[in-house]
Amino acid sequence: MRVDIRYTEKNCQDVFSVSLSEISPVDADETTNEAVNDWKYWVGRDYTFSELKDDFF
Image (cartoon, rainbow, N blue to C red; front, side):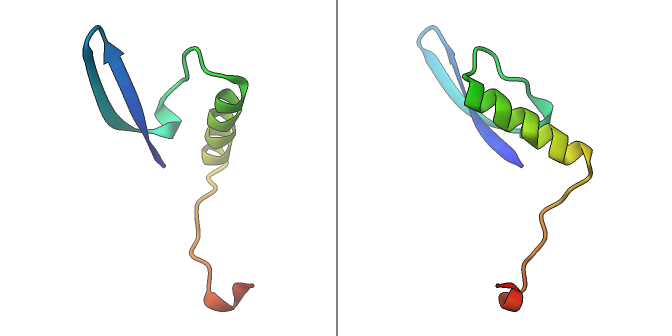
Protein backbone atom coordinates (compact mmCIF):
# COMPACT_ATOMS: atom_id res chain seq x y z
CA MET A 1 0.00 0.00 0.00
CA ARG A 2 1.30 3.42 -0.91
CA VAL A 3 0.43 6.73 0.73
CA ASP A 4 0.90 10.33 -0.34
CA ILE A 5 3.18 12.41 1.87
CA ARG A 6 3.02 16.19 1.89
CA TYR A 7 6.45 17.76 2.39
CA THR A 8 6.71 21.44 3.30
CA GLU A 9 9.89 23.46 3.71
CA LYS A 10 9.77 27.25 3.93
CA ASN A 11 7.71 28.39 0.91
CA CYS A 12 7.99 25.12 -0.99
CA GLN A 13 5.54 22.21 -0.89
CA ASP A 14 5.71 18.83 -2.56
CA VAL A 15 3.72 15.61 -2.47
CA PHE A 16 5.27 12.22 -3.05
CA SER A 17 4.17 8.61 -2.73
CA VAL A 18 5.87 6.07 -0.44
CA SER A 19 5.25 2.56 0.78
CA LEU A 20 3.35 2.70 4.08
CA SER A 21 5.50 -0.08 5.54
CA GLU A 22 8.67 1.98 4.96
CA ILE A 23 7.76 5.09 6.94
CA SER A 24 7.51 6.12 10.57
CA PRO A 25 5.17 8.97 11.47
CA VAL A 26 6.65 12.11 13.05
CA ASP A 27 4.45 14.24 15.29
CA ALA A 28 1.42 12.17 14.29
CA ASP A 29 -1.77 11.76 16.26
CA GLU A 30 -2.64 8.51 18.03
CA THR A 31 -4.96 7.34 15.25
CA THR A 32 -2.26 7.73 12.59
CA ASN A 33 0.35 5.95 14.71
CA GLU A 34 -2.06 3.08 15.35
CA ALA A 35 -2.92 2.76 11.65
CA VAL A 36 0.75 2.64 10.58
CA ASN A 37 1.62 0.13 13.30
CA ASP A 38 -1.37 -2.05 12.39
CA TRP A 39 -0.29 -2.02 8.73
CA LYS A 40 3.30 -2.99 9.62
CA TYR A 41 1.98 -5.84 11.78
CA TRP A 42 -0.30 -7.01 8.95
CA VAL A 43 2.54 -6.96 6.41
CA GLY A 44 4.89 -8.66 8.89
CA ARG A 45 2.43 -11.56 9.13
CA ASP A 46 2.53 -11.90 5.31
CA TYR A 47 -1.14 -11.03 5.00
CA THR A 48 -2.21 -9.85 1.56
CA PHE A 49 -5.25 -8.43 -0.14
CA SER A 50 -7.23 -11.00 -2.05
CA GLU A 51 -9.80 -10.55 -4.74
CA LEU A 52 -13.27 -11.43 -3.60
CA LYS A 53 -15.51 -13.47 -5.82
CA ASP A 54 -18.90 -12.04 -6.67
CA ASP A 55 -20.68 -14.77 -4.72
CA PHE A 56 -18.63 -14.18 -1.56
CA PHE A 57 -21.36 -12.19 0.17
